[in-house]
Length: 137
Image 1: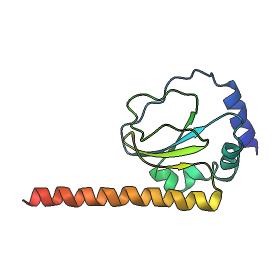
Image 2: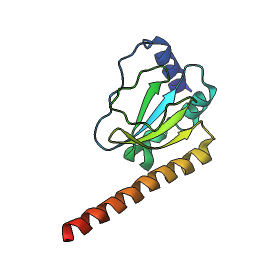
Image 3: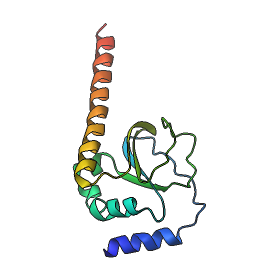
């Protein structure tokens, strides 16, 4: 509860025109688009927020938070804009690979995130096989 309160205080003190978020350019990350006063964001922060960085998913795709009003840099390659908060966008090297719109509750969130990560794993496996076939020729 203290963590949630501190986070809300941080959000209230953060400047509205924060610098744009730059993609790391390396690996995978989970972008969380949130908004001040979003009850579903607050629920995610309470139920998932404290454990996410400790989870295997959180280690594979570290969380990056942005406010819905923040301008994204053109280097992000999203399939479409975002309208709902929270929206979780799985990025690989700054390119969207999937998303979860809204927060459907703890059990559904972990299951949906597992599906996103599995789809990235499958795509990477197919690409690796394709490269190995090309190298063998």
